[in-house]
Image 1 (tube, one colour):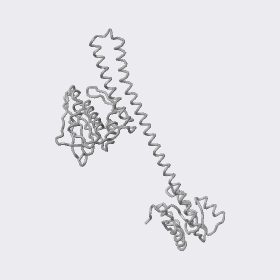
Image 2: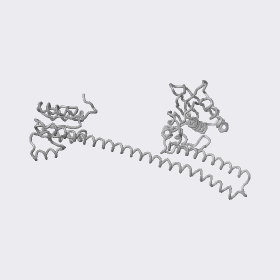
Image 3: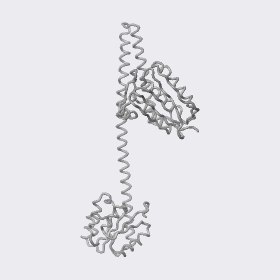
Image 4: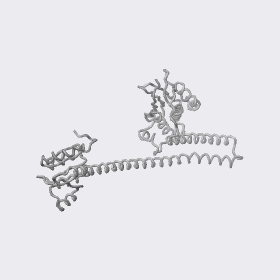
Length: 378
């Protein structure tokens, strides 16, 4: 059995006595030892256990050490294993040939235990250093690739934001210029209509910027998670009251389905923000004379809050874009209400900051249900 935390040395020699002598010397330093008595076996074992070092005899029948070394260096999985040749002769041409096929060092017979341990220790430490550098380099490359992807996503996101802001601002500026320049020639009803349009645009811009600022604060870690015990019935009542007039204008009924007293352990501000966004979207995408069901149920040690509408719904392509910041997702509401989709991205992040999650299911023209999962307060 090989201990993965201890350096492994594979000894390859066709003479059992040499295997025994080398093993006795290496055991003094606590190395794990593996044995092979021929070249073919050495290659198989090396590929299997990937030792930290190979002590390889040159003179062996069928396949000599040079050929074994050459094949190991040609294999990507064993290429970086240091190989020290064991030789009974130290002629220059033999040593040069050994280095040419990939050996890092050589040891002559008979073995000097001090020299042997010193060379083995040195090359294992070098290999471990190379492995650490390679691992760090791979991790760094992965981190750099992920960072580039994040930066690219953020760049695209801000490009989308800039585009979405330009439209409402252009309209707002155009209406204000019309009102300013043609005020005296406008009828009272026309002034009222322009003012109402400006007010609606201002509210939409404020909502958009508010979500953008909240998302920015979340990205910078400036929104602190402060969990408290929240009564869901009370929270539902407060959120529903905010949208009473908006729902009434579209003749939408908001139904609460929460009979028992349920409390959650959550951040009041974050949870309130999530439910406000979800209910606002549900109203936006509901048909006139429709209904929205706001409910909650206990599941294991969590509470699942759901906001269900029976409106436009989403197809598979739209569902892929809901929580992505690098893809523009915009669908007008049933009364042509506008939005940017930023609110849902913010909601997902706020849910995760509370050790919860936000997910949904949707079908075109059948509606959408968003689920907010948060820890239950027992």
